Length: 582
Ligand code: SAH
Ligand code: SF4
Ligand code: F3S
Image (cartoon, rainbow, N blue to C red; front, side, top):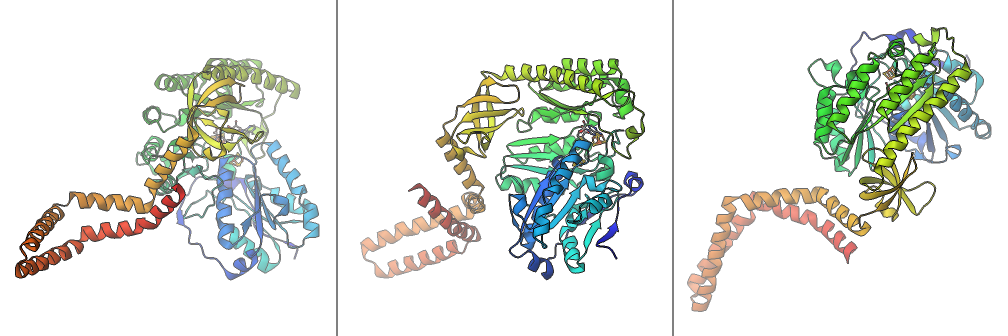
């Protein structure tokens, strides 16, 4: 037997299937002694390529590894276990992965216990795992996008069998709930609402690597978001390859507009969502986005091409006119909305006229930002079989022309922002200069400004002074100390003990029987004072006894018991606050 156990391998035909219904599986995590022993004192590092779906998978992998006892190591070349979380969307994404694998060769040859694992979309391609196992003998474990939640079982199997393991399967995919996760950010969180994709755009590999389009149950999404709000998160981004096709698979009228509205109502300061497919973008969505101030007026709306004939060849399901009319409806409802996009240049047989249509669409829409790509054939997709008559030089010329038009739109919008004030969620000190903070405006623009680092994770007002197209320079308008103080007050209000105290205090204030008892107690106290002055011992003793009885009744009243225990519970917190303030 060879060094590698191939448990299962991907199959593009199976990956295309859309017959079965997905299951929702509640994960029941059990840690074996083998994995706990193995993880003891070991570190892990995950290197992620590609989109937010992969970023979220990284958080889930981290969740599992940390449960087992692995500690995170930020520098991947120092870790005992490295996982490369790959992307297959374009060839250059794959080239980066090959480069990365090479970095671990020397480490693997020095340290026999070092584990290099690879997962993600690239592994879902037919033939890829065998090729990698053949070319890089120090890769010890390969798995796919459908078994991220099996990471600990796979590691255990690798250790016990003393073999390298490949386990990647192509199926339509289930929905796994109760996933552990270690989020990468303390203030901004991603929440999956749909997985997979059923659109099958002719150029795209995602429907094959991520399985069928399936929506998470509303209750599971709401529970996750509610927890994030409670933890003090400032921003949630709802994720899906086609986020706005949410709920279509339930066939019960649930739509993206419904879930968006419900999450917005939870009170998260900022709510974003991506990626929206123009075909599924309806007027209900526009209404909800416009209605809630905490839904950011920033919409990523990939157009791919501005030519109807090209869009048809791409399998995009909308025409140039439909896209433009959608943009118009969105802008009518929200004049300040920022619209961003993805565009592919050099799709097979793109004519000059088709390309000019893309340029003119970009001139009309004036995007706030755009990701532009040169078409990259992906094995197994319909477009990869198309014979292409456009040479590379033409493709590159078109790409450069497109960039110029896009830049003009970006600069136009950026210039409009000068002199205006925006709310910025502070990410922290900027990468280039520790004394400069950076963060994003509601409309997704990066702003740099001077301010203290403790503003990280806070929302502040910034006036835009200068525009540099892809980032802005601004001036902090808020007093940082006051921002911090009001943030602390808000945090305090969110503490469980404070919430409980508030509830029981309200019950107490509204209880008629308590009010009556308190009046009786007060009257009895007055009577006792009078009797004491008269020096009538008999009467005084009687009044004292009645008073004690009333007090006992009061102290044993359930509403009073609740309030007193909530007050006791609050005490350590109050002492802590007092300690900080004094
Ligand atoms: N689900 C999203 C995005 C998926 S991939 C959507 O439907 O828009 C992100 C972007 O990569 C796509 O919008 C597309 O512009 C680009 N892309 C996908 N496949 C590609 C390919 N084969 N070559 C070049 N760009 C591609
Ligand atoms: Fe790919 Fe199209 Fe699905 Fe987006 S909608 S993931 S581009 S197939
Ligand atoms: Fe890449 Fe997979 Fe995302 S192919 S873009 S990581 S869904």
